[in-house]
Amino acid sequence: AANAARMLRLREELESVAAVMHTEGIPLIALKGAHLAWCIYDDPGLRQMVDLDLLVPPEHLRRAARILIAHGYTPETALPSTDVSATDVLHLPPFVNARRTRIELHANIDAASQHHVIAPDALWERAVPLHIGAARFLGLSVEDLLLHTCCHVSYQHQFAFGLRPLYDIAQIIRHAGAALSWPAAVERAHTWHRQRGVHLALLLARDLVGAAVPEHVLATLRPEGFDDAIAACAREQLLTQATSDDRLSPHAVAWHDSSLAERMALLCR
Image (cartoon, rainbow, N blue to C red; front, side):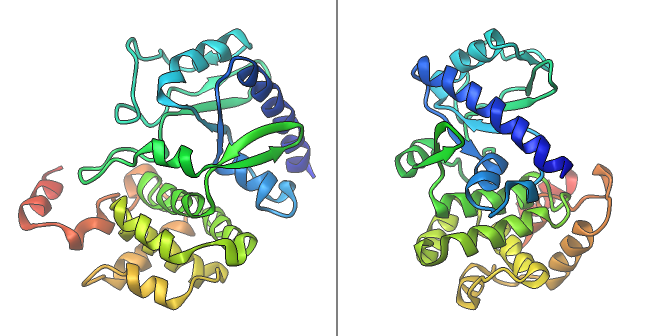
């Protein structure tokens, strides 16, 4: 009940920010919890959120930040002194207002890796309309939403968020049904060079919360020489309150796809 009340307050704030951005001609894609809670879960009170994540075209990022500041938000740390692109930063420092609502303005959905940078232009081309209360947003396509959720829990947070991301994965698959193109999702995971983290997240979602992940999808994504000990380590981390020093290295899922020189570089770091 407390979370449902908080979600109502967050939705009100989201509608207010969306109205201001729309007036200024800045498009927004609602990311992560904002999309999941109000468009994927049957009851938004079942999905907890810490902050509101919004994807903004990189060329509008600095102007969107100025609009938030004029709307009563303050950046928690100093903003970059120069314009940024989707390859420079994942998101700007969080903004917070007097009601302690936090908003993150994203330029992209995942940080650049040594192998590949996700092209945000394609995300915008595939985006779909969303209705969150009285606000009109765009949302990631169902395949992009699923992959983003998998990458967020695996590469960005190393399975340190408990079971919530796995339930997100299960709910996305349930809600999308036949509209989810598994071949497109698998192909895109390889194109993004994120297939190892996606495989591990989908495997754990199937095993721990019963997500309806087809076996052939896991088989296609499974890295050559995949070590089940990595899955066991991730399972343990999901179910414990690990400190940042105890977390699974974000490089672990890529270990079996690395050359000897890359492995030595990872060990040195």
